[in-house]
Length: 339
Image (cartoon, rainbow, N blue to C red; front, top):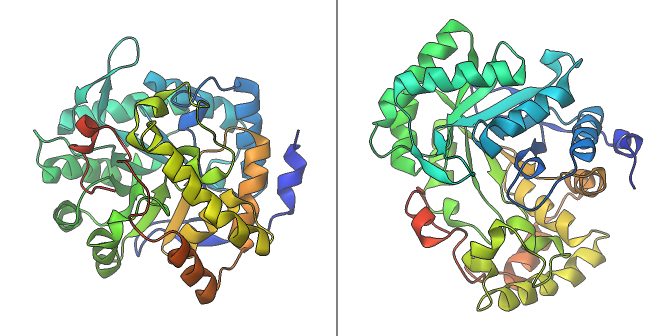
């Protein structure tokens, strides 16, 4: 097992979330898989992974109040206890409603709900502020201006430092930014998910907004370790993992293996490095829940892929080559962009 000390050798780079956001580590840690979604996680190992990430210079930690109905925030509070609050940034999503048993029960982004969600988040996390606060999805019943207006009030009151968005299209980004400067957009971006390149990424750059990219390994498909039958979790309902699509997608991944090995990288490192190479305004989020996976991800920042490397990767796995949507059809309808 990789020890926490193994990660300390990395000289962590930093990136700034847009023109108005904070300076953060060039790689962020996503907490979701430590609580649910991809099978059983080990609590002690999850906490040790957070400690190892902080010791390696990772400062950006992403969570949501609806990850296992608050479990992830409580877990992170335990892992962060005793750490200097100014040494890390908390990015928190809100607005998705959870029913007993864990199923999604809708969305609520009304101003009064936003303030209520944050009150509970601050208590669970044991902090007096969050660094980036964002609706997890746009509530179709509430204008984004009203939701963002509530976050603006929380910023003015000192409970939130920056506004973020998640999974919205270019028009919503513009509307939100007109009310309160947006620090960053959190959205899926990987070799298999590139729809953001059409309108969203150009809009972010025009307005000076950063991006935190999740799903950089396409939920494990791009890791080089996933095999059919390995997912006894929510991936079983995702089209990219269906029997009709997964063999094709895994074959695509294998075409990248010689490229990775020629550069002394694992497939996961190549996939993370590709996202990081798309611009200094993009911060990849990794969902590592073990120190071993964290230790593998960290060197990705030093890969320094050249223009020739990127061209070879593009030729090998061009945009749109993957089969299947990234979410089930009923969930895709709630997203601002597709695949």
